[in-house]
Image (cartoon, rainbow, N blue to C red; front, side, top):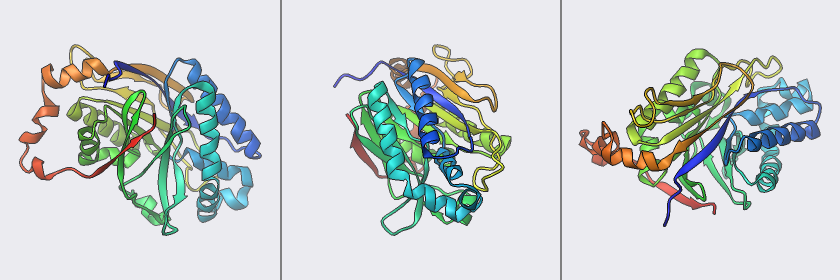
Length: 302
């Protein structure tokens, strides 16, 4: 099987609007996808909890109430994902849909992001480790890690806080992932930096590309996404042949728009075997490393 040599990515610094109705939201997402595809990107990444914006279409009674917001957005999940399926096909791009609440088989909320391929295939990754505020909301942990086999290569998704935990990423990489997508939603600069440092660390440890997307700006009408600080970025291991600081591309804090660039997957494969350091291979040297890891489902989207 031939592996792709590179990948072109656009990562969103996404600002929220209070839109009057679902038609306006659909028009906004359609513009964003069109603009992202126009950069030449093959993969578009929206941030964590971007779906919460939908609640604003139903007035203050819904958008101002946390539980009504979660219920409303969860009910629209299928419609929302289908819109992205249509846009992915139209623009011939893969899209990581902005995550949001959906209900699992037990009727409990989970935080899920969907990876949509241009052929209409859809893969779902749920957030695995809950933050304190998600626990207060009643959002529960996901059930399964997954790696998505796409025409762009093998891709894993670590939703925000998940990227701060090395074993989740390692399990995905050992299942073949070469690109890890990190959709994030952080209230403060400290929160953003925790996720960014996590994304950079996961790139360093595993010799892969990590891509962070971020929510930006204040949303006074929503108790769920009221304050946001973030920067989108594309990260790799700091190595002389690739990047001195591990930052391939990065936006400006709290500006709305796309951050786009490419990752050289062939160079990263060589790095794992012949880099200045061999973190990927030396993982097993750690005491107890052979006992660490996790089960990963392998999902084909091509």
